[in-house]
Image (cartoon, rainbow over the protein chains, first blue to last red):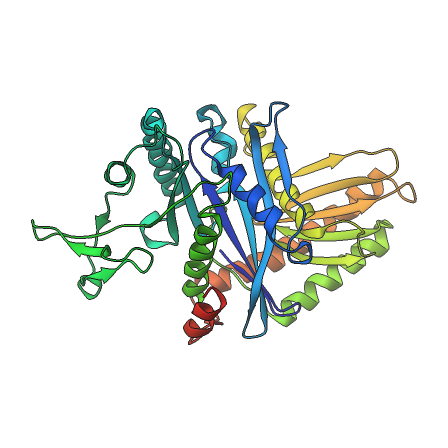
Length: 225
Length: 162
């Protein structure tokens, strides 16, 4: 639920980075914090344990530019990845405008990723939000690690696509970020499916971090257009 | 109405009425500053002394504070805690729920007392609840259309993220 303030001419939107524990959600925010100009960002707030595991959330507000005279302000949140923090994780999703699912590419983390994805769908459904109808990006992080699973395997497990039932949307839509791939396509069985946009990333070095942020922000602003 | 449901917007007249109510509260209670924060963590309004902290961070933490306390309430068998009090050595804050969608925060120091703030806040919460329920019901019956603020701005959005 974006908030538009006509008095201060600001559009405020909420983006949540979701995913399993130690997947790199906080690292995404830290990289953004380190790279954007200090006058375009607020404080990075971390409610973390002594061992730097996110306890409640991290929060970073950033300004990404001006459209139609309105400053576009994005409130970036991460959630705690560990399963036993589900209560606080769910709270952060309240009023969300866009979601980034940060998946840990390591093959050993496949199950944890799938659990987190299922948990995201469940928590969103409890609020009455439909993930397939809102800005949603999947980021495959830690692509530099030797034990990273092949991209196709990750896509099949975490982003297999959902059915497109609206006939008006049943047309091949190319993925603007990956040449030769489609976001909406027809399966040999005749069924139309849509995938979420995905990015590969190495959040510790910053690779893919801004691509992800820009893509989700753009999708969020387009929902207002 | 469930928490976090749908968008809502208020008109200039609503904003005027909200500000008047808050100003009266500050005058009656001698609190320093009153802030209205949406449950999703967005700052809606500030009246009184301009706070010398980051209001965005403040709003986020306030919403989180309230949400966490709601869960605590449920654990002990309550539906929610409709007000919270945080006491500091010099500065204190009192928070109250309005229509399950907005939080009123009063910042006050030792120029007033908790009793007075609580008493006056109760009146303001009553007035603001009526006001906000009207705002939300208007949004719910579809009479207020979403603003379509960026309608036709696709190119501009593409350029921004080019």
